[in-house]
Image 1: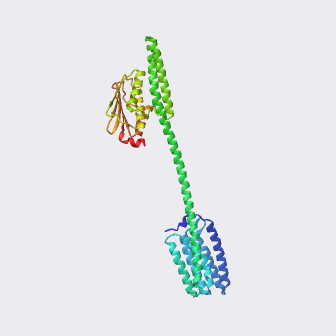
Image 2: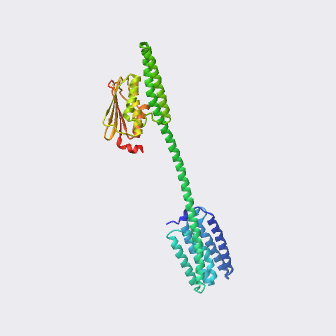
Image 3: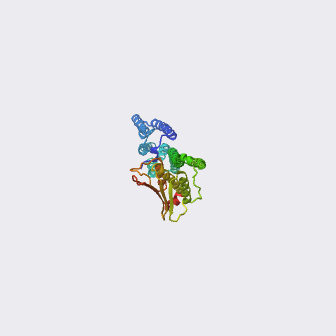
Length: 396
């Protein structure tokens, strides 16, 4: 297991401990060398202290931290020097040599099993040195308490560093997640705007296409009516004007995201109004019938079927040149089905233009389907179906 501190960056506590360790090495090396009589032993002790100072730095320095290796090196080298000093001087003051190494060991041993290994190792070094220096005297307890206190200081500093490191990682993680959420939010906003644009475009296409088809058909017939009867022609012009006004109102409602169908009207009544207006202004015969028992459905489904009816009727005379259209609305147990059949010219193949694609998108959004069948000179059949079992979920 790797110590948690290995993954952090060098911080101010590391700098402080490095500075204190340098002073500790200088003070103890000066004292021991000064109190060593043999010249050769002085050089040996000097090299020993250099090893104590430099070897742990191979594993614990800025931009490189292998704290397990540092713990092993620090324990072996400083413990050996502590044992030597206890044998050499045999006095209680030698315990002072352990204070900083114990701080460093407690500082780096922060997770299991090193948390317990560090404590046990420190106790063993203390007891072994005490035995070698014959220091099991009346000062033993106070020396033990002092060394334990310094170990706890190092352990507490290590906990502070671990907690600060975790807090930094948590803050960094939160910042990264916030950035991701901001990007996701912007993407959702873009998709919502795009979807809303498509919806408004489809609604405008269906509304404007339906109204303008009726207006154009009525205007085409107007010259013939004027030659036949001037008064009827004037009434016909007023009807065209009313139709254009209603179309303008529908466009405004679409822009303001208001369905042209009143929410309290059943779907059959809405269909009947659309069919009646269409026949009145286009002169096309439309046979509308309902199969099954009508029941209440959601506003989204009503709105989608109304738009699909308008698009189907408009396409029947605009592209199919139909003179007879049959509209059937089937209320089945688990689904709602609309069929629009015409006697128009039919087509070899049907390409999905803006209107048909919008119709398909509306049905798909409600878990429904659109099927179009057509043959040359045999008319076109449009079928739209939505499973009513999904209605409750769709209205939530």
